[in-house]
Length: 252
Image (tube, rainbow, N blue to C red; front, side, top):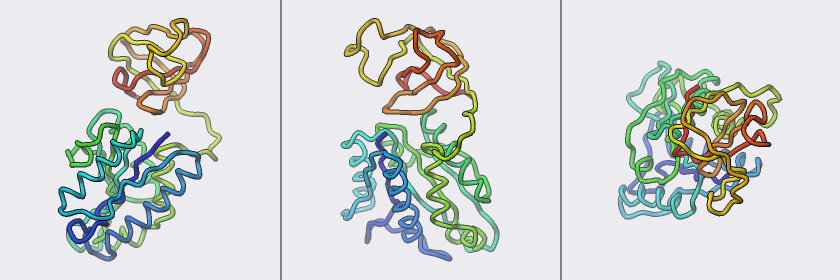
């Protein structure tokens, strides 16, 4: 899978982060550089979408989305930290996504982050520029608050990067059985043996499937498709299939 990682702000003088107990730009880099290394070590391609210069804030935001789009990344991840007003209270974490696929990814990442002890502020759908202008599933992570002493006391860049990685690709060291899920097919389509276009595959390898809810053993996003593991070989002579993401969604 190819990831586009955007270390938010970090493009002075027009696009810099907030200040608090710690400087947002600094902690973003601490997490972002570790996340890039972890995804690459797991065998994934990673594109750093952070611009090195920009003539304005809008130019900075545009360059991030353009970098992801021009490199045809599968998932875009923008890393940020929140700020509101100085406080000793715990403020917590939230993740943004617009499309259903993006929100499913956001939920997975947020689930891992709150395991670190951060308050769960939920998955939200604000139409941030980098989410609107990217052409693939995209999320924006507000890891926690830089002006919350409690959040900064809890924050550890290595643990945060690991949590985001696990939320994106799972834990390779986790030998537990994947939780069953329900995949909703929203229109008549075909199950494919790969992510190639249907027109490029042998007709005998394509399996028609009707709209409805289907119980699956495992599902993940891969190259704009859902990779699905069926409970058995009831769908053709294989138990693994690919479904174009526009024709399906995870409902459980």
